[in-house]
Image 1 (tube, rainbow, N blue to C red):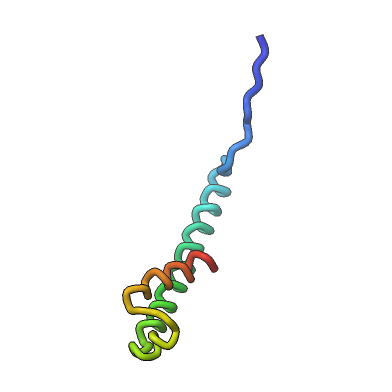
Image 2: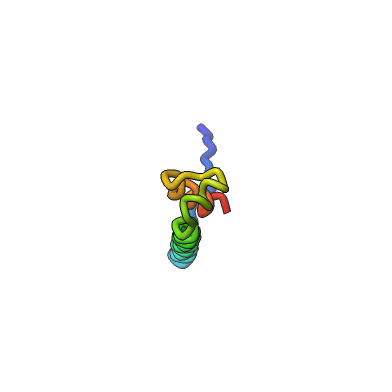
Length: 72
């Protein structure tokens, strides 16, 4: 009886490659967090009038910052 198996993995198998992937994921998460905090701080610094001119409300700021960090 013959059978075929898929031996390709989405994750690296050796320890150093797995550590490198983990480090890259960690750095990407830190960069997203940095972009989120920077965007949020800049938006929070705007007055209500300036936000209204942009068509924004304070309740939207966290969502906008999250979108900026994850769509970049």
